[in-house]
Structure formats: C-alpha cells, structure tokens
Length: 327
Ligand SMILES: Cc1cc2nc3c(=O)[nH]c(=O)nc-3n(C[C@H](O)[C@H](O)[C@H](O)COP(=O)(O)O)c2cc1C
Image (tube, rainbow, N blue to C red; front, top):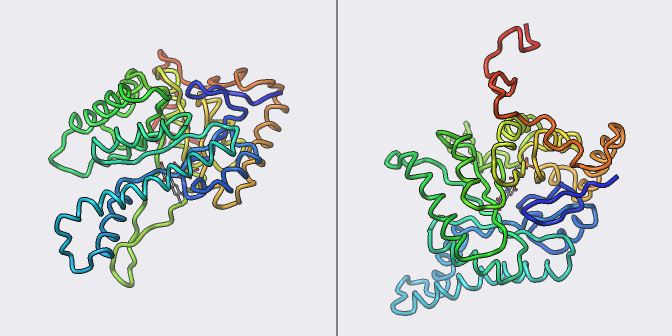
C-alpha cells in the first residue's frame, strides 16, 4: 500500500502537507516534518506588510529624528533586501536539507512586488509557489469585477515571468465562489488551495477594544472545506488542495474522497506537535488498509459531485427534517 499522489506536477509520498505557518519558518522544523512523513512543506509566507513594517521600524532606528533626506530610499531598500534575503536563506537551506518538495508562499498587495518576489523565489530553488491571495473585499468602492480582475492580472503576469508550478490560496469571500474558482483554474495555474483562514478579531469586553481572536482553527471548520472540495474538485482544471479544519487522518481521507489532490494542515500541528504529522499519515494508512485500498487513486474523488448532480446533498443548505437528523 502506498500514499503517493501527484500535486502541482510534483510526486509526493503523502498527500498531507505542512501548510504555511510559523512552524514552517525554520529548517529544523521542516526536517522534523519531513521525517514524520509530510508529503511537502509550504514555507511561512513572505508578507509585503511585514517588509514595510520592518522598513518603517528600521528607518526610524537609523534616523530617529525622521529626517532621512536622500538616504531614505537607500535605507528602505537595504532593510527590504535584508528581510527578503533572510527568507531566501531559509529556502536555500531547506532545499539543501530536504528531499521533499519545498513550496514557497507569498502574500503581497502591490502588483509589482508579487512579480519581483515570485521570480526571486524561483531563483532561490522553490519547487512551486503558493500565492496567498487573501484579498478581503473591504472596499465599498471596489466591485466584484474589480476584485476578480486583480486575481487575473496577477496570475497572468506571474505565468509570464516564472515557470515553476503556481497554486493560488484563496479565501471564501467571493460573490460567485464556484464560478470564479473554475475561471481561476482555467488561467493555466496548477493548483488552488482552499481555504485560507484569515486572522480573526474579537472584542475585549472589559477593555472595550478590538483584539486578536484565537488564530488556530477548530475541527468543525472542516465541513465548509469538505463541502466546497466535493462541489468543485471535478470542475477545476487544476489540482485542489484542501485546508482548514483538518484534525486527524480520517479528515484527510474525507477530503481525498471529496476529490482533493492534497491536504494541508497547520492548527493540528500547533495543538499536537510536529510529530503529529506521523499520526495523520498512520491514521490515513490505517483507514486505507481497513477499506482494502492500495493506493490513493483507488478512492480519490469517489464522493466528488458529478456535474449533472443538481440534487446533490452537497447543495442542501436548509435544515429540512427529511435531510437533517435534528427533529
Ligand atoms: C499561526 C498561524 C500562522 C499562519 N501563517 C500563514 C502564512 O504565513 N501564510 C499562509 O498562507 N497561511 C498561514 N496560515 C494559515 C494556514 O496555512 C492554514 O491555511 C490555516 O490555518 C487553515 O488550516 P488549519 O485548519 O490546518 O490550521 C497560518 C495559520 C496559523 C494557525
């Protein structure tokens, strides 16, 4: 029995990837994840916001009076280069020490920086690139078309400037989620990663101020991922990597049955430690053995929605007694 899969044109020994998060920001952790059976690792994203924050903080340190004169551009570039080169050092070291694919991750908001960084990621040796395009539709001045056009413009330009496989990591905030995911998959990308979990906010009722909510997901969040994986997997012209809410190996089996090509995990590694990657793989293999499957291909997509299945249970949203167990 084997758990080999192909994802983004890369051959993986396991469909379970360590998703981009703080745990994938250092080489020791990456080696531990490989040893515990990760099929690939997605590095912690490089965030344009973080680089800009570093620039602001450091230009202040270099010139506390705030009068940078002609040197501002120089210092800002120096700080940006420093932040970025630390990240590339991580990529290079990871490529040296790991045998599994290393997937870089970028989160930018300015068009030019997406292109610059993507090219540098490729040059640093990444096997593929995941673009964390968590564009939230906050602006009332932006229409659905404006938001979707941003995706198309970036993807089309990236396709021209790099040759490594590209996956787009998306959130759920689209007017027409199914249609847009399909259109995205037609743009020549190799994968879509669904769904990004954005930072949540909470309210501190004593202080009466906004604060960060718990950043880890909880197991029940799997159901949304599962539904959309099953609805979309047969309709995309690229791989679908499912993420958010995976807590055990059976969750991985569910997403593969729903048609995911691969699955990413983060929160359960934070909760249980890096070696939990081994448990996830063992649980998946245990289930496959019980069911008599010798390879992932034998069951992957078995429960994915067929295009003519208009009455699919996946499409039910109301709590009708007939369909729900709750009376
Ligand atoms: C602490 C933490 C940091 C994260 N950092 C990133 C990041 O840098 N880039 C990214 O694309 N996703 C990031 N994520 C999101 C994860 O990659 C993943 O998509 C999300 O947590 C859902 O998967 P999970 O339910 O297994 O946690 C982060 C998640 C956590 C919990």
